[in-house]
Image 1 (cartoon, helix red, strand yellow):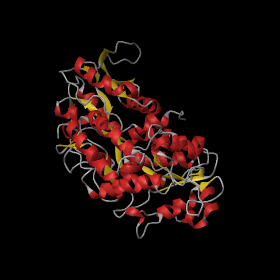
Image 2 (cartoon, helix red, strand yellow):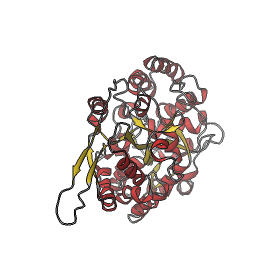
Image 3 (tube, one colour):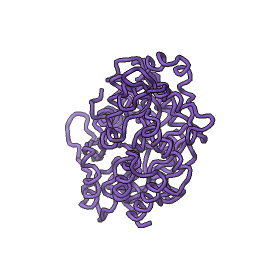
Image 4 (cartoon, one colour):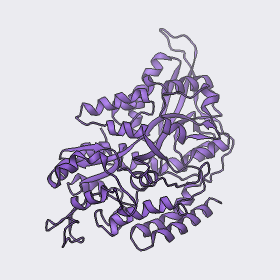
Length: 459
């Protein structure tokens, strides 16, 4: 169903692309075709409209092919042409095509990039196109793409967070850990009420069989890690920030506040301590520049708990040769949090096929149109009434994905938003890596990273 590259491709759905934040958007016209149907035998002679549809994920593109075939069956005068642009080129190519007049009528976008198109008047809001927001659309995704009190696209995919856990490791360590895996709690500094740190210390084992809670434990010879604490925005530090009541950006603004918000500083300190003080997670030297390291450790049976998301589900299902399951993220004082990350399809404001675009958007925002994504198993549909198709797909493979569905509907922290994403991440990235390596103090490092990130976006 999916290949080994799906982790990097799918994780990028809403968070990691930046690219074209400063691109100049010239006046444009859509890349669509209008054809005269002149074929014999049943032809009506009516003009046929072809809508261009751009996205970056080849697995979801296959699901769209089936969806669009059904749409055209119901709307024979409209066909949809899929334009698959690889992720590595997507954010460089998109503004170029907008500027040159070759942009597709509809295209996928993420939270770091859509505001520039809204500000430039290059995409149309849902209220203008369809008149109203559908109550069935995932609320977290609607919130993520609401800007200036307008929704700027129709939700298509909702990523969700949770933990994958190795049942055998937990059961062998302590059967009570297995039964309580969905109720783990963390507190700043491992304080009163923290059950996550004690569990991870018990689950981390060195080559001599000693746990991280035992005298004589050797952190340089770890055989089994308890957890995947790492410099990982979507899987790790954003959920921790949210669950501690912290913030990454100021409310209603793109300004960064992660270095001045004490709750956020506490969250980072806890994660970094898991790596460098308690030694229950791999060294940042292994994970900072290798997003697959922890996943591979888990798949090889060398990690008990792997916190990740729907974007890694297929990888775990295909690669794990042991009994595993899914549970909610550990809860902080504010509860268990995931990241509000999803994908919308945006409509070019310059389309010459507005009526056809509206019909297709209505279809894509319905359960009938969105369910094909779920039926393929490639992603969690952002139309909640279509999510049962995804649940059923994985149920047939003996995987209970309900914790992910619950997480998508539960408490979430907003993904990074606004334009200038590339410049800001370039500014803070090297500093945060040094923090995770333990070479830069958390508090002063975050303060410096915040200042440089805000300078990069002119705040």
